[in-house]
Length: 109
Image 1: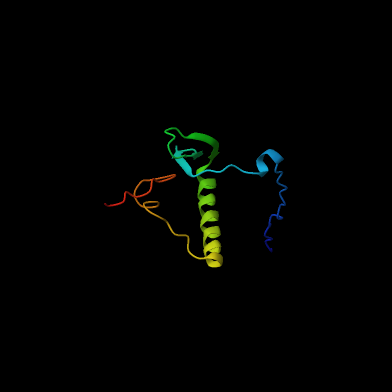
Image 2: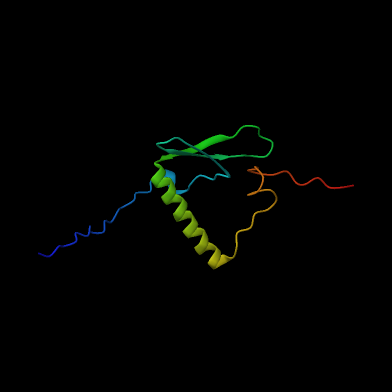
C-alpha cells in the first residue's frame, strides 16, 4: 500500500491598499508589550520639545505572528545591508534605553 503526501496548493493572497493607507505613517518609536496570548506594538512619533507622544497605529498579533515578523525583519535587514551596507546606530540608540530624537551632545567649553 503506498501513501500519498497531500501538499497544500500555494495560495495567492490579494492585498488591498486603500489610498488613505498608501502614504504610510512615520514612526520613530515603537512600544512593545505582550501577554501570554498576544503582542501589542504601538507605533508612535516623538518630536523634539514635545513631552507627549501620540500612538498613530496599534498592531496586535499572536506570539507566532510576532516571531514571524521578527524573522521577516531580520531577513530584510540582512538583504538591505548586503545591498547598501551596514545600518549603524548613532549615539545611544540600540545601547542604553533611548529613543526618538536626541538632543545634540553638550559641547565642552
